[in-house]
Image (tube, rainbow, N blue to C red):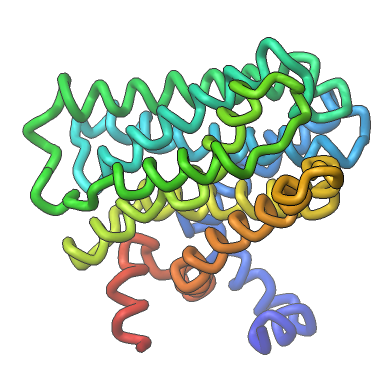
Length: 286
C-alpha cells in the first residue's frame, strides 16, 4: 500500500507501476471482465440494487468460461477437480428449476426478465462441457488420484438441510427446496478443488482465477441476500423463521473458507507473481 501511495506522488513511479501491473495476466483478465460488466450493467440494468444478483451470476459464468477455454486450447484437464464440476452441475440444474418457471428468486430489475436465467443456463452448459472433457474427451489428462474428495459428503448434508430450511418465495415446495439445495451446496462446492490443491502442492493458473471469480461471485450474492434475508424467512413458522439468517450464514462460511486463498491470490497479483504459485507462496508465508 505504501508503494502505491508513493507512486501517486511520483508520476515516473506511477508509470512504472502501471507498466508492471499491465504485464500481469490477472490484471489484464480482470480488467477485461470489468469493462464487460460495466457495459452489461449500462445496457441491461435498471439501476436497481438487485442487479447485484445478476452480476454475481455473470462473474460465475466468467469463471467457467475461463476454465472451458483453457481446457479447449490446451486439450488438458490438469488441475481441475471433476468432483467440484459435478457439484456445480447439480447447483445450476436445481437453481434453474427454481428460477425459470417461477419469479420468486429473480432480481427485481429488468435483468431478471431473462439475462439472469441465461447466465445461469450458460454456466450449466459450460460446467457440463468441462465434465464431458474430463470424462470423455481428455480423460487421460485428469488425475483421479489427487481428486479424492468424496463429493457425496457435501451433497447429502446440503440436501437434508434444504429439506428442513428452505424459503417459500415460489410458494411451490419442490422448487423452494431445489433453490435452497443449490445455495447450500454451492457454498461448499470448492472444497474438492482445495483438497486437490493440497494433494498436488500447487495450483493451476486457470483454477486459481476460477476460485477467485467464484469468491467474488459469492461476495456479491452474500451482500444481496444479507440485505434481503428477511424476505426468505417465514415469521409464523418456528423453524423457517430462521431461514434468512441461515442463508446469510452459509454464504459467509464459504467466504471464510476461501479467505486465506484469496488473500494470497491478491498478494500474488500485487507482487507480480504468477497466480499459479499462490499455493506454494501461501505455504512459505505460514
